[in-house]
Image (cartoon, rainbow, N blue to C red; front, top):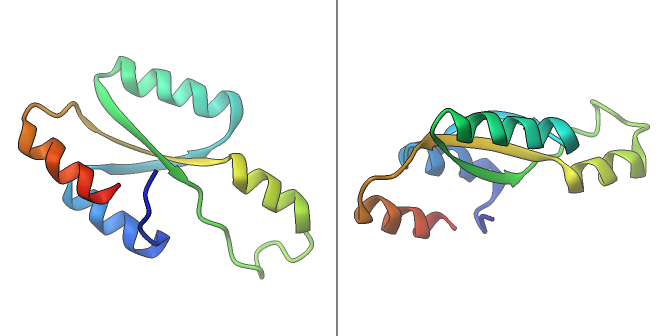
Length: 92
């Protein structure tokens, strides 16, 4: 997964043809991966971004635990050439 800061991740990925889909966990994550692969997309999973403290001030450890498991799904059409793959390696 990426070594880029979360706020910098989306623009970098978008420049390389990735589309941010949504964040999921568990069975829903597995279903989405299977669906997008079946539709012919390349899949990239990134750690989920943590919400603001104001959004869930009492969530505490429960939110931390969920965030360690949740992943944001990015998709793009399967890469056809080596130069696109080389650019991908620069993101992480």
